[in-house]
Image (cartoon, rainbow, N blue to C red; front, top):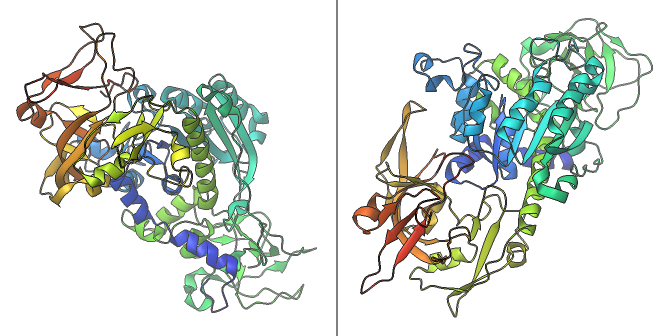
Length: 603
C-alpha cells in the first residue's frame, strides 16, 4: 500500500512475499542450479505460473507458447532459419530468457515430437479459457480455441509426466453440459488418478483477487497408493482486518489523469457489507460489464479486487478518501493501475520491468496478467505436488547394503558425500550416503532419517549428485554453475559456446577441477563383473549459465587418462557401455559404466 495510511499486518506480509522472490531470482535459479524435480509448462504465456513453479522448487526443462505471427510454428521462431529475425514472439523469448530452455512453439503443431523429448516429473497447462468464462461466449469446444481443453489430454498422454496440473475457468464444467470436461477426464483416467477442485479460490491462498478456478491434478498410477493420497493445500485463515483492495492501492495523487472517470453512476440497491474475498459492489454506470476502458461496475476498496481481464478492465474504484454513508454519490472513479493489477495477482515486484524487456506496451502487460493464475495459489499447489512426489520417492529409497571404503584428499568433497544420492531412473529410486569422519567409510541411510529437518524444504534437492550426458563430440565438460563451490582452484572462464537453437552463444562462468565419485546402480552388473560404487574421477569442468543439460566430455579421459571408451549394445559381451582402464602395476582396473536413457533417447 502506498496511500500514506498505516500498512496493515497482512499487507506487510503479502508485500514481503511478493518481493522475496523476483523474476531475476527465478532466472538465476534456473540458470545456476538444476533439480531432479523437473517441470514442463505448456502454453506458458506471461510466465506467472512458471515463476510460481520455480519458486516452489521445480526446474523447467522445456515449454510451449505460440508466436502470434507464426502461429503454427512447432518451435521458437529464432530456431527456424526463415523466422529467426521475428520480433513478434515476445512470450517465446521470455520463456527462453527466464529458463534458458527451449520453447517448442504451438503446443498442438507437432504432438509426436514430445515422445522424443525429456519427460518431466510435473506438467502444468492452462488451456485457452476464453470460451469457458462466464463473461465469454461459453461455447467451449465448439469454438475457435475452446477445443484445446479436451484435446490437451492427447498431448499429456504423449508427454507422460508423473503429475499433471490442468487449470481453467470454474465455469468450464457448466459449458456444453459438462461434455468437454468429461471428455478430458475420460481420456486421462486410464493412466492417472484425478483430483479435481471445481472452484478453488485465489483469495483463500493469499491473493488479493476474487477469482475461482477449475483445477485438476492428475497423479500417474505408477505411484500406486500415493496417487490416491493427494490433497489440495490448506486454505489460509482470514486476517483481521481482512486483506482487501486498499492494501495494494497506489495513492490517488499519483494516478494518471487518463485513468479517472467522471460519468454518472448510481448506487446499487440493497448494498451488502464487505465480505472477505468478495468484490464489494457500491455503484454502477449501466448494466452488464461495460468496456474494459470504462467498466460499469464500481466497487469499494474494502473488498477484494476482481480477476483482471486481458485488457485490464472489470471494475473501477472511488477515491481512497471517499466515505460510504449508504446512499451518497461515489464521485470520481478510477481504473486500476498496472502496479495494482500486478499486486492483485501477487506477482513479483519486478514483473513490469521483466515484461518491458520484451514489449513495453500496456496491452502486453495486461494480456500476461489477465491470462495468468494468481501466484500465491499457484505456488501453494506446486509446493503441495512437490511434497507428494518427494514423500513417494523417499519412501521408495533402496538402501545400499555395503560399506564403500574410499580415501579422499578434498575436505569439501567429503562433506558433499554426506548428502550424496542417486536417481536410478527419472522417478523411482534414490540412494543416500552418509559419512563417518573417523573411518572414511560410507554407509547407506534413508535421506529423511539423515536430514529430517530439510528433506522437504530444499529446492536444489540432493545437489551433489549429477546425471550428465556423455558427449563424444565435446572437447570440454560443461556443468551447471551450482558445481562452482566444489571446484578446486576455480578461475574465470573465457570459453564461448555456440548454441544452434538460440542462434547465439553462451559464455562459460568458471573453470576448475572436480573430484567425482561414480555411483553405480545395481543394474550395471553381470554374473562375472560387479561394479562397485567407488570409482573416482578427476574432471576439468566449465560451469555455464543457461545450460539446459550437463555434458561430460570423454576427451581428456581418453587422451590423458588412458581410458578406453566402449559403447556396447545390451547383447554384446557383458552388455555394459563404459570407460575402461586395465589394471597396471600401480593401479587397479577401473570400469565406469554409462547408462543409456531409452525413455528419452538421450544417452
